[in-house]
Image (cartoon, rainbow, N blue to C red):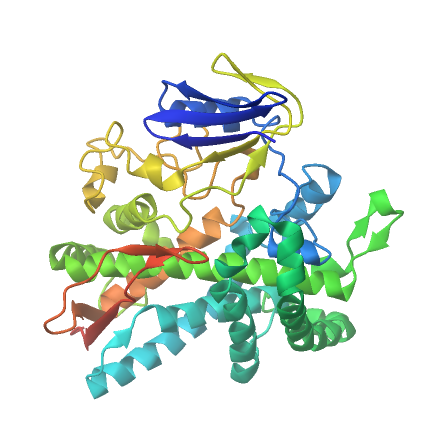
Length: 449
């Protein structure tokens, strides 16, 4: 099987054939090649290679990480997008966002009073996890239940790098880690199956009670799904467990990682933090609540979020793509079954595209005419923290909303400064995502209203 890795300023491809392997250097910038592959030839590059990850030991729903680009993947992705991840649904969870923001606020007030530094990512990750569970189940779960599920999924995330042996030695990996992975799946089922079964039994009653409150639950849409390619078979509760876990892991950890990086830059550069605060003060009256529609009036805050996604994307590579037929890309034949990947971080840090690419400069997203970089990649690809084309992350909209919403509220209420005598360590390490090597801790003080 061949392998192509895209890395600026050139693309290196290693293509295997019956006579061994040969290396080709294609002297063309990554950004153009990525657009050719993922946008102009999106259908051809929308496939995934067969799974060689820890999930291959279990039945996988192939929501987005599986190998299929056929009916199963399109069916589940379409349902996920229409039932949970379209802008018209975002308002349904506004009350829940405010509720979990209040949870974070109460935790931060404790640190203000005690003077103890805040482990910045912890309260935000809890809020994200709680919010995603609310979006899935349509109700606020007990704190112990939330923390139990977080602990289980934390084990999955913490062992991600260790379990990467599956990538190179899937059979060996299954043998070595079968018991560990089976224990994880057993714990996931133990925590989530009772919630799923309870929701299924109470669905109609809850739906009537919540009708006036405009509360939806994504899981309700899964109960009625039928796989036409399997004679109308419905999803089992065990499959729903896997699907919910995939959503929780992808949605909470990636967003939390980006938030921590953004806050690290604001702690390190107080001038940027004060610019964010000043913009908020100009838009929102001191007596008013910050509303989500206010975010549209804050270009600098949006630029800070985009700059965080550019410089510190949670994933440095996309999930692998593959082609099912030979295809010509930039004059070279990409053979059938070749694995293709793109360096997301490399694109966002390419000096041929970005000025001072390793510096955190939100002003780069504030052109004279208000030019905004298209992070969907439809027009051109300068950065793609969410991927691009048919396999673009469907959580792009809700992910950026959560980053902006919590950033504006936590910047408005609190001033964040480095722990005395400590510099902010901006080095990174790879875990489930590319996170800070030294987790960010900061002192918080309440701003005067």
